[in-house]
Length: 230
Image (cartoon, rainbow, N blue to C red; front, side, top):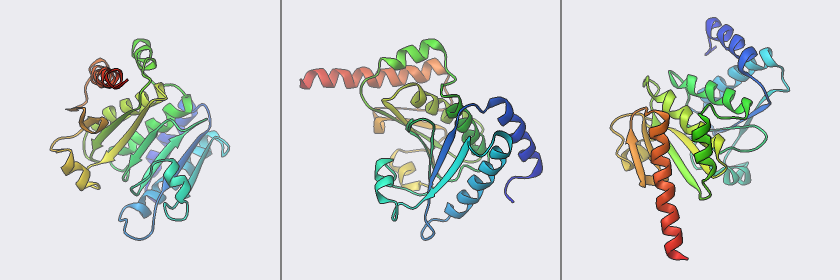
């Protein structure tokens, strides 16, 4: 059992208050060549079991898929690494977790589930209005580790940005499980946020307006490039 009785009790109490609409969690996993996949499966099974006891089995479900046998689905969700977790509601909001959401990152997973269940980001109206202007695809990557106290705030904010805009996708990436990506994007401190593969990047859990500033700067740059090529 990965979740002890205290965590289970807290999770049930939180779910009764926070959980609103149905959520589907999709885990892309494989048995060979993935050290954390089995643990990710166990963790998500226990989490969904606890949440369904609080809100009902019709409100939350888990699908475990293989990128090999479910190739079309993996391609549709842009899955190229395992374990990859997709949290979706009425639709795919572009919310992904790549790695095992254990340690302090378990908070990220739970907040992601609750925010998707509410179908709305926990952001200011002003931020949401700005994000509604975006009409060009933007990808936010947040590099995290399981022991980083500031990482969940940055990760959940990136997911909220994806919830607010159909054009934004947000991946939370465990840096220690994906050392090639961490090296490529020179991750020496976490959380590290990378927007559109390096068009903008910063380290630390920035306040909402600062995070928004980076995203909108990338959008303006993309908009300028678009107008120059037309």
